[in-house]
Image (tube, rainbow, N blue to C red; front, top):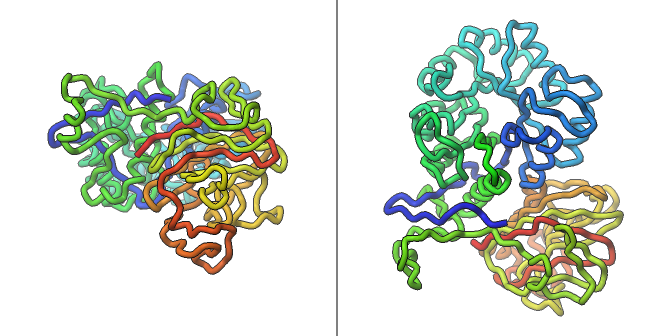
Length: 495
């Protein structure tokens, strides 16, 4: 998938972003982003994009075999079917909004719904005179309220007035800070967040193309919203919540542009060494003028693209494999027997994204930086794929999400046959990080593995080479281990 983002070098103002979260960012999305789809289809879209958290909004068509629209009056049967859909997709519903109601009894119905669905907060935009009553309910139910800001003349468009409205209330009432609408209202988003320190529950993250009421959403880092400053401010505050991407512009390339926003946050998180400078340079960008003019690229004024490349061509002409052992049909790459599939190109630092689907007893893996495809066992790093989980007796260092026989995942997830799951794998220098359906499962520093056949905790592994000595650049491979395995949406960004 090619990114629509351009490499833009501005003198003294490189378009960048930073890691505001410190640890692996928990990336969510407001379902309104895909309001042209049903709720069920939006859940699938979140999974496809590697987004693990979702905020629902009232009025979206449900989809699946359910009639009607999403709302807090859903029947018990509809709620259970929604829960099952979310469970099967590996997506967590964290909130509901922007929703409003009249009196206390109507609000209790919303809180009862949030409690039943195990939501973490409710996003709302009520009149200020209702805040004391809502504060009381938020405390009673143990479910925070996040005050949302639409653009002027919204009640909460001005962050100073919002702060004043919050002063007499408990910390059960905070804000859902919409960075796009702050810009549309003439406020610098980062400065607005600074005014609201200590009261930010979540955000609707957006970057816009101009600071006017008609400013439209653009991929993170390509607009005027200064996402670097936004994320730096959140990091300074120690924000630990779940930010929500909200893309209100119904672009003809909507999925691609939202994917660019996700990639931008991931890329930011992959560069902790630049956090002290409050910048992370996206792939293909540069902060050195000499690089812009290198190799004659300054001979014309055209901007050049960086791309999220397809890992394999549809005809597999850039892959090495035994004839007939792998087939790419209708976007799905399937193992048919006969060994592994390897890229012809070698990769060093990268962000790899892919979906995989297992069948009963599937055992497979993703090989990273392989330096010898004939003796791959001792010359590659394997991110494990395995149908099932540790409950079936599988050793923890062999379950899905592990670095095979080296490091067990910190978060285990049962892999069910027939369901698609999403991997994001970031390799940079000695560090490799693995995300499964948007949640970090494994983070490893190869330099800590100093001996062959031995892990830092003293346990033994199979490998004749210490992991610190594994090649830092090599081929990427997919394993066939005697059981059916399928992949799709395989893309890579070089760092």
